[in-house]
Length: 349
Image (cartoon, rainbow, N blue to C red; front, side, top):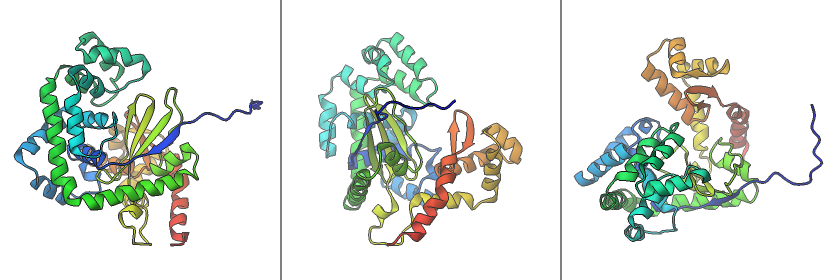
C-alpha cells in the first residue's frame, strides 16, 4: 500500500563535528598494536610493526600486554572525550584529578540512558549493577570482562598504567613523526570540513567512513568524526552519552598532498580484495545469501584459518559485512564501486 505524506517536517538527523588530535592517534595506535587479529589487515606491514616494537622499552611492552588482556585502550579513548586536551601532560594531569568513582564511571562504557544508573552504581563497586551491565553488553566481544575489570581494578594502578602507556607510546611513536602526523590529520580534517558543507549528515558519514550508513538513533544528537592514520583501513566505532563516534581512516590525499594522481586508499583496497580467485568464489557464494564461517569453510573446502583471513580482507575492503556470526555481501559497496572508479579516473587533477 502506498503512503502519502501530508507532513512538511523533515526527518530529524544529527549534527556532525570533525575533530582531530595526536592524542587520539596515540590511543588508536595502542589499540591497533594490541589487536593481533587485525594486525595483518592494517596498512602497516609486519616489518613496520616489528620495527616499531623494537623502539619500545621493556616496561612499555609489559604495559601493552596489559592493554591486550584488559582492553584498557578503551579507557584511554573514553577519557579523551571528557575534555579537549593538546598534550600528554594535560592528559596525565586530568587523570590525576579524577577520584576513584569518577574514573571508573568514565571507563565503564555508555550503554544507553536506561543503563546510566547501573553505570553509576557499578563505578561504586555494586556487583549487582555490574552483572546487569554485563548482561546488557553480552553481544560485545569484550565489554562484559572489561566492565568487571573496571569495577574492581585498583584505581592507583589503573591511573599509573594508562599514564605510562600513553606517555611511552607518545614519546616513542608520535614524537619522532609529530610534524608529519599532525599535518596529515589537519589536512584530512580540513578537507572533510569543506565537504561537510556540501553533504547531508548521513551522506557525509557514509562517504567519510567508506560505507557506514548511520541513521539517526534516539538520544544521539551528534556524530563526532575523528581521522586516524595508524588504524587504516578500519573504522572504529564508539558511543558516549548523546553522541556516536567514528574514528575513520585518513584519505590518501591527506598523506600525499603533492601527488595529484594518488588514488583513494579504499578504492585500492577493494580491487586488491577482488584480485584473488578464492575471495571471488566466496563473494559469489555470498551473493546467494549469508554464510557463517563454518558454512563458508565447508563450501569452499579450505581451512578455517585461511577462510577467516580472506573474509577479513573482504570485510576491511567494505565488500562484505558481518551481522552476528553471518557474513553478507554489502549491496551499497557494489552500487558505489563503478562510480568510485569513474570518479577517480575522470576527475580533473
